[in-house]
Image (cartoon, rainbow, N blue to C red; front, side, top):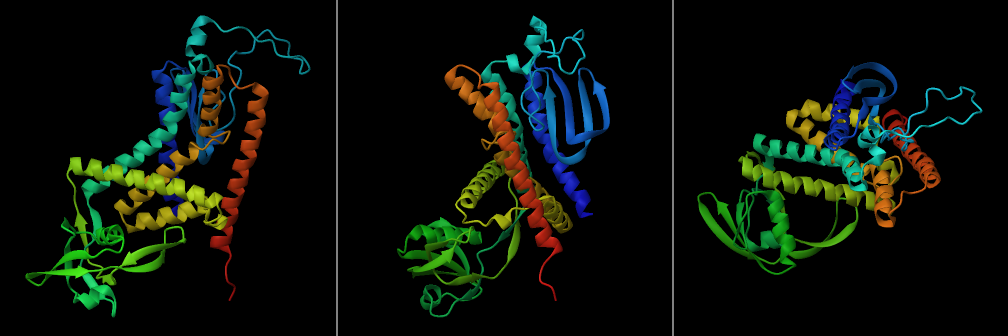
Length: 380
């Protein structure tokens, strides 16, 4: 089942990505020749109008093939001029190319203004980010499990216990700010910078106020780095409630969550380059399949959240300035915009080859990590 869930997730995310390219190309008058889910040999296909819609053999990607462009995933730009049908068939003879008609130029990707080409290329990653945003908004309206501020333990000889806080207390106010989620306690304590805090807790039917000075402590962040912070010495009771948001609140919360995931994704890439995050944390399709199965078994909300997380990752990764990715095309087009001339074909070809090597290397690393992670291990 986990393979099926992985195919569903990847299929939807690839479709959303390629749909962005497709719709912007159509809006800007570019002729779209092929729209493929997957790459490699064609499994099934149907031509509707000028576009052939395909389902291809390998479901780990996709592409939109436009007139005057070689496809975002499968290769670089092609010469926008079709071959002359009367050209000699001898393989040693250079193909004879004819000039495009004005109508063909109007529908050619390569003949569009550079800003139009940039918009078409950016549309894929942006659609992935937009899709994640919509999922987060929907999840907020469906209800989000939230850990309450009920205290399970006031650690001995720490600021909270010394001040008189007890298990079962519910923190309601920190420095005149209403508090209902456990993460708000951490935020309030961190914002204190070690200065005294005024906390109000609900104890039974009464409200009690404490003044507590957080103590300095060394902890680890999301990436395992040691950081200096502050704590008051309380542990959560683990009480969870479902928090619902109206449409306006959901848009605000969904936007915050989307930006948070984008930020974490970018920081993860930076930390990986800095070797803070180990390379063996990179996962491939087996890891995606396993996680998709686990999240699906946990319910629709975790499954949708996982899909949104992957969608953000796909959008951000595709914007990296690596040839063969959308970001590589954007880099070429920005150079064209700055220098008022296209990047020479030979440079683009070399860059494409380097980018392909890098991408294949990353894929090999991901598959290797998956194999080590799930098919080998301690031998007993």
